[in-house]
Image (tube, rainbow, N blue to C red; front, top):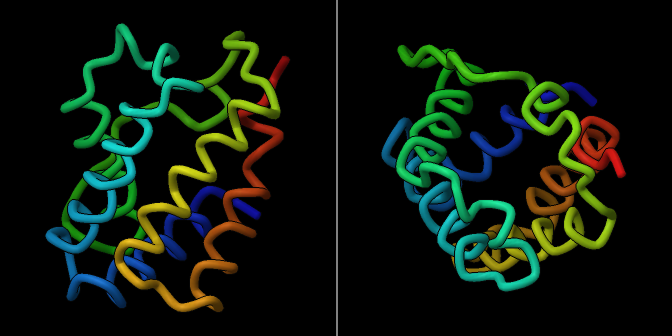
Length: 129
């Protein structure tokens, strides 16, 4: 699956749980990034990251992919993770953090499975150990 399909699925999930548009996208991204930042299994990967910028970039990426007025100016998933030597365990921890957010917003099983399937399709661009 392409990143656009993954982002489109996240937009659909965000719309289901928090209304529509950029506020919904922001709510899901904020919760997800909060989970990642607090996860000792992977938060060291973000120790030097500008977390507010990361949130803005994710929101813009999702907003643009959904046809909104935002413009994503960040790197592709492959380029963003190149040379980071991300492991399967780290990827799995990230997915668990996402599931926590989806569960918090009571996202339905079908929508959750669609999103996780799409994210799984991006794994080869992220895991590069």
